[in-house]
Image 1 (spheres, rainbow, N blue to C red):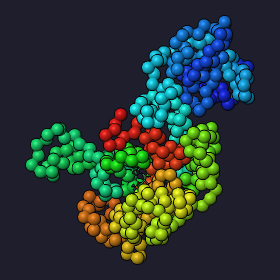
Image 2: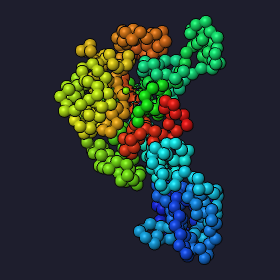
Image 3: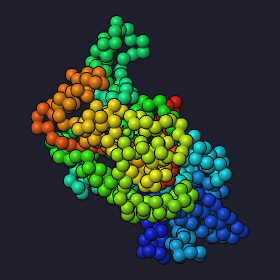
Image 4: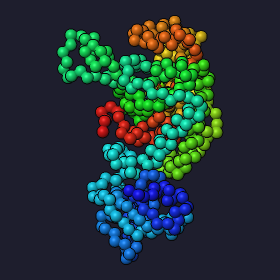
Length: 457
Ligand code: 4AD
Ligand code: MG
């Protein structure tokens, strides 16, 4: 259908005085004896276009005024009666698809919780139009950042035999029929599609390391899957994961890259989504724009885990989980550090090795690893990052301590045999990042069709 995007009509002054055709859905309808006002949205931008219908000159079918109806309107672009924008003097209004009154997106009932029950329709609201514009702009900016900095974009397998994080949170992939008769677990997997146990990848890191030790700088941007039984506002069973991996880089180098990349992407969102950020600032998180400007214009904090534990122990706060050196930081601790103590994003570095993954570089103290989590106010961890253990013997020791099947990681270990180099990488949870820049508080509200425990709508 020949038509013009509403975004273009609103932003491009050359349409003024021209006759155009637009398509979209009715957001609101107001009526008087002579004139009717239709607000149309087509999702190409946050704003809507008002079509003014002279009822004496234009036939307006009764279905055309219903919220949610799809219309095709032809008319002249004129200066708006109010404000300095434009509106459409309708000459012809065609109904493309009617929308009966059961349409669930009526003004009164649109709480975020209610909208979670209609994921296929909620995108037609202001909030979700803004969220997905920001999400799209951020994704493009992430690709641009890495492309401009000479990284290869690689795609790592989704089906895999190795559990990168070793946390036993892999979804299994199988074609074995229900009730398959097998004498043992080994036989069960032998008879399965791949002849061994397979699952959905929790991270592309291990394959990312393979590529980085050939191309120096790579990144992945794809889905990761975690069968975590945690029903929280920041966990999904399927999330999008950005994982750069850089050869000849140690922990301070990768920290610098992570900070630079985040600032680049936030700047892009501020530049390209001014209207959406304004909306979030007014209706979702007061002060959001200030916060983001503060982030791009200041340096992130860096704090050693040992020091973080001391700060938390001295904190004037009641935590549900006690803090001791050696414990994993809980969300309440992460939020306290970043929201109360540092009041900005903070890299917590050098965690105890016992609570972190096998692949992390072991520090000389014998107790900690060269790993960092980036914590941000409102969310907690958005990045998990580390220098990788490049020494074959040390890596083998860490794997054996964790009772891992060393034979299953032969290729990974080969990287330490053939031209091993210091290298580092991180994983950014894309949805958590989108939460941070929009102020949305529930990860289910920044994902098209969120998957979580007992939820696959
Ligand atoms: O900290 P994680 O588990 O680190 C890794 O997977 C490393 N292999 C990354 C790397 O070094 N290449 O996960 C990285 C990030 C977390 O900080 C978080 O933002 C996000 O992925 N994440 C989740 N996001 C949503 N739902 C979940 N269940 C998530 N689990 C991790
Ligand atoms: Mg982590």
